[in-house]
Structure formats: C-alpha cells, structure tokens
Length: 101
Image 1 (tube, rainbow, N blue to C red):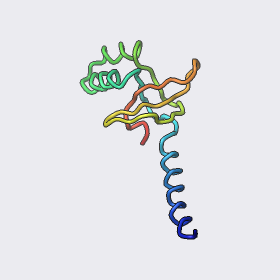
Image 2 (cartoon, one colour):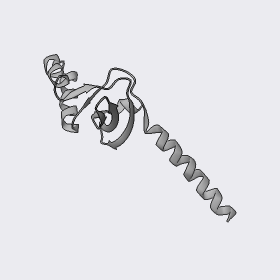
Image 3 (cartoon, rainbow, N blue to C red):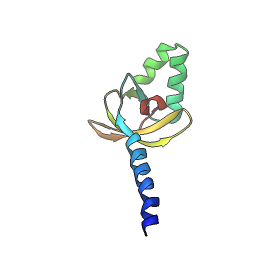
Image 4 (cartoon, rainbow, N blue to C red):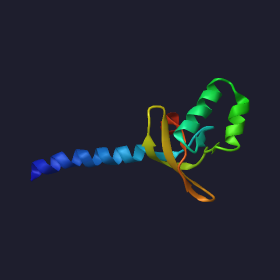
C-alpha cells in the first residue's frame, strides 16, 4: 500500500500543475475570433500588414480579450480555444497560443 501512495502522489501533483497552467488572465493586446479559421485569417492579415482586414474582422468576427480570465478548452498547432466571460456570458473564441504562456 505504501508503494501505491508513492505512485499516486506525483500523478496528483502533475495533474494540479497542468490544470493551473491551463487557466489565467489574458495579458497584452490579444484578439479572439469565433473559429480557428477566422483566427488564422486574422493572424495572416496582421502579419501581412493588412490593417483594413484586421479592423474589419475586429468589428465583426473577432474581439479584444485583454484582461479577461480564461480557461483552455482545446489546442491546435498555432491556436487555442479558450472560454472567457463577457457581459453576455461565456464565449469560446480561438486565439494565439502565446496567450497561455
């Protein structure tokens, strides 16, 4: 039984550390978009300097998420889907992975 407790304890600590790393507050000027594809389009426009397209997307498909508490829901290679609270309730935008670092 003693051996079992030595095996379970590190797993519990690892699970707690992983859960803590998957939530936080968005720091910096970040944008969340309704879908992963929309976020990709926004990121490509921003990197390419297409400010008209980024402005259009922020006014319709994307929104600022700076300062909001988040919880990670899903992760892809370049983006993460997070849950954030708004005045209307919880929303689940996609944003860049740098938000969770």
